[in-house]
Image (cartoon, rainbow, N blue to C red; front, side):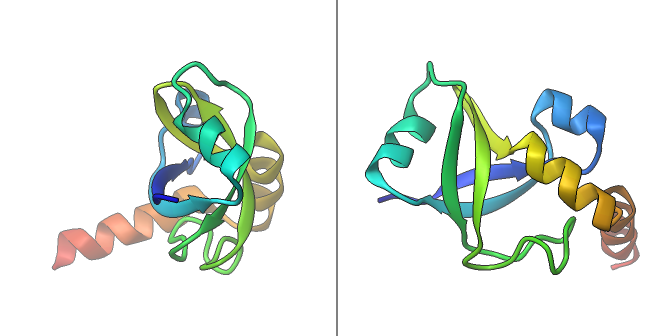
Length: 106
């Protein structure tokens, strides 16, 4: 299986557009691989995350299995169930802002 890039939205607006932090992942099964590579599929799939998230530190980590929403020709993104659950436990928009401030300083 080949790795794919998935998006982890930082806020509700980013979630609506499917934008967000890009992280690498592998589909969990051949069925999931078919789903994420199908340009006409807009349903759920499962992936194994291959790097830690900056937006969701400690919540989305290397080797976690997460549910994503496939977005046709565009990148899959974090499923709404997980977005709601994780955004209640952390502030991904603030984490994003902190990262951007660190980059600007360097």
